[in-house]
Image (cartoon, rainbow, N blue to C red; front, side, top):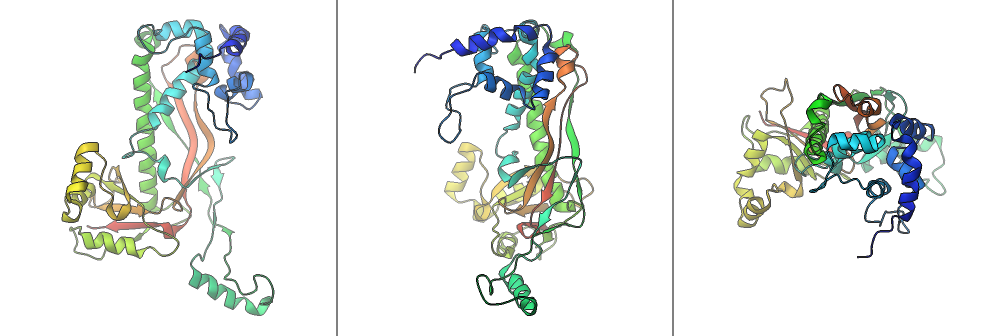
Length: 370
């Protein structure tokens, strides 16, 4: 592996000396240019990318900057939180944010990003969703026949089914979500960065699990514009059987298919002990990797029961992750840079403005086996 060329990084690093005792100025400069701190470093010291724009450099510009400044975050020569604050206080908020984001890349069992169909930027606290009111071919064909008297049926598209794209009646409110990091600087300053970083990752992991929980709750209550997912359970109350999973899976109509299940602990345990999922290979995979079985090819995710649901633990959400839910983001995840730089870690807030919206109600189902 060739040696890393830090010539440009050292040149940029010397320009950042002006921020050593005025770290907040960096964030003001980034705000002026509408860039994140990481993007600001990349602008000054671009990482090598392939033809598709994907970074192929082993580390990004901020990491090269730390090397140029001889700053070690991990290993035997890692700096303490206090030493980091003294040497590169201007990147401390970004380092905190990075560790939290790393923590959000949690185990597949609790992750949410792989079941969000799309992340949509938004301005303001209200979001007006788009939708197709009649998606399936039968309904669309009926719309074609109904409108035939008001338009020509000859020419390109004249006899095609009609699919209308509209705004939903109600707006969705984008909410503030996040965490307050409550610790005094005196508590963490003499600890190595790695010691503090793992706790930040733990915070990120919990935030990711919270978002998965929000998607589960969304399907149970609706998003304010779309109602709750349809219940497909027709079996014996209090008993979840293999047939109930089959009925739910086959209830989906084209173009949707069930590929994800969000289940509380009680429901997951019931599924795992079904005879149909106890074949030697499935059992071996579960014991060897801890990966849950995939009923009808669906990925299992574990959530907490929704407060107020009766009885708890017996409401399952199934979905087509490609068309069920999108994330709406008005303000991306950020940390209060001023408090971190001023070493006022107590009550430092990590937050974002985001919510989830149902794309197509046909991509969601419920199994309420109470």
